[in-house]
Amino acid sequence: MIATVLIVEDEPAIQELIAYNVQHAGYECIGVDNAEMALAVIKDALPDLIILDWMLPQMSGIEFARILRSNERTRRIPIIMLTARTEEEDKVTALEIGADDYITKPFSPRELIARIQAVLRCLPSAACDEIIEIDGLRLNPADHRVTCSGAVIELGPTEYRLLHFLMTHPERVYSRDQLLHQVWGDQVSAEGRTVDVHIRRLRKALESVSKDECIQTVRGTGYRFSATALTIVKDSDADI
Ligand code: CA
Image (cartoon, rainbow, N blue to C red; front, top):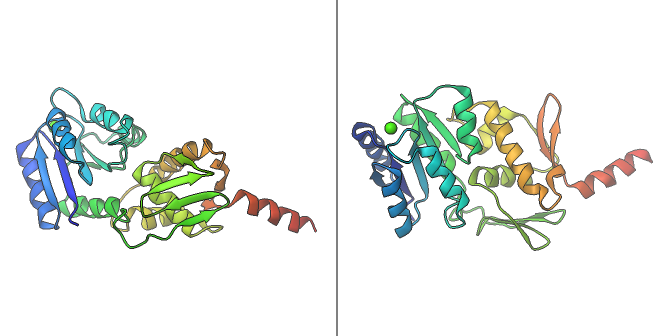
C-alpha cells in the first residue's frame, strides 16, 4: 500500500516543492493551505503522515497538532513540523506537543524525504510483526498496540518505534547517537536532545503500568531497556 502524506502549508511555492518531492519519492500526497482544510481531509480518511507548517493563517500548526494528539482517532498520525524558527526552545515545544520530528526552513528536499522515510519506517504494514513480550510488557507490531496485563498503553509513533527498538534489543546500552541512527534513520540530522524528549515521553506513558523503570538511563552513556524482574534476579545473583 502506498503511504499518503498530507501537506499543510500556506505558501504555494513551498507546498508545491514539497508535493513534487513527496510524489517523486513514491508517496501519494494531498496539499492544503490551512488547518481547517486539513481537518476536512482527515475527517474523510486518515493520512499516513502529516507535514505541518508552524505558521498558518487562523489556526496555527501547533494548535492543529494539539487537536490531532487529543483525539483518539488521530493521535497516532505521525507529524513532521515545518518551521522557520530556529530557536532550540521552539523545536522542543514542537516535540513536546507531540510532533515526531521537525525541519527548519530552508530545508533540502533530500533531507525532508529522508525524514519522511525515517518516520514512516516500521509502520504496521511492515514485515516486522512478531509479538514481543518482556516482563509483562507486550508489544504487537501487527496493530501497534502496547499492553501490560491487558491495559493499553497510549504511545505516539516515535515513542512506539523507540520502545520497539529497545524491546528488540533488551539489556544493551545505546548512546543517543546510536538511537538516532536506529530509530530516526541515519540520514536525519536530529540532535541528542530529541532522544531525551522522546525517552521522557515514553517513560511517562509507561508510568501508568509501573513499567517506566524498564527504560534506564546509563550515566554518561545512554539508555537501556531492562526488564525490572530480570534486574532483581541479577542483583540477587551478584550478592551470592
Ligand atoms: Ca506559513
